[in-house]
Amino acid sequence: MQGVRREWPGAVELDVTIDGQGARALAYPSLVGRPEPGDTVLLNTGALALGLGTGGYAMVVAVPDRLPPDPDGPGHLVKARYTPLQATVLGADEQDSPHHAVLADADDLDGMPVLIADLHSALPALLSGLLLDRPGTRVVYVMPDGGALPAWFSMSIAQLKAAGVLAGSVTTGQSFGGDLETVTVHTGLLAARHVLAADVAIVAQGPGNLGTGTRWGFSGVTAGEAVNAAATLNGRPVASLRVSSGDARERHQGISHHSLTAYGRVALAPADIPVPDLPGPFGARVAAQAATLPDRHHRAAIALDGLEEALRADETAWGVRMSTMGRRIDGDLEYFLTCAAAGRHTATLL
Image (cartoon, rainbow, N blue to C red; front, side):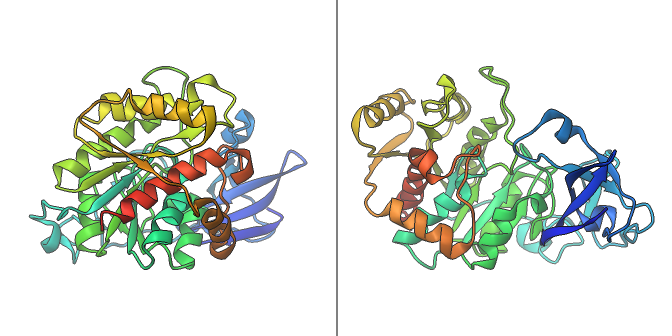
């Protein structure tokens, strides 16, 4: 290892040398130990070999001469189970948790809006639209396990918390590293409401969306499952559409097939679906695609006044990069406006 490039809560980005060539690597110190310049580190280079745009790091598997201390509790939840880097954490819903009594019989979100999106990149834009119209709203991010498992991988979570616009995070299923850990998305939503006192929960997978170009082979199906979970618990699901004019792939042009499948086929409970009032032929295409979603959902037309300005201002003020699939605001404005419109609609439910 040559040196530390930067770090944020839970993660350290490194400069390393692999076969004489420089590369970036990422370490999670609580799992693998904290590397220091000159250390030999054991790396997994699979992401580098694949040339992944998200997560294109060598991942530190261990710092052999500087291993972290063995976990000594409390906590009996094992995340990333039966993998070499499984993590033992204290679950908010387990018996040893100080929150167990609150969650033991919890069964109701009291009508809390649950704002749901496909991609992790939606998170800051959703917040931008929501907080523009309803400043001071207490928002908690609930992370399922369809993308990255460690929440530490996300710089957005760290930056949004540091900016004071995200109250906390809950990692669910096999994901870990949030302010609270839970076994399921259901208990994650209940913990967001009853432990972290959320006014709104946002559910979106972590970084590293996976898709295969098939009808069902993509990790974003969890968005439809989150609609069902929120409705089951008497929440108010708001389904943010994934819209793009900048993605060259036809299946993601206009409303992505990910949203049409997740909300049209997987989400069996009704949800509010904000439809942005985008101009011109592209806006007409998005509206026509939205009209094909089942009638059990409530489609709401959302004006976009002030949202672009808010997105640009918040990117600077919060220190967070608005980017999706490598495209910034100018490269796919409709994507970010659609997310912000979903946040704007959610503000009307409070």
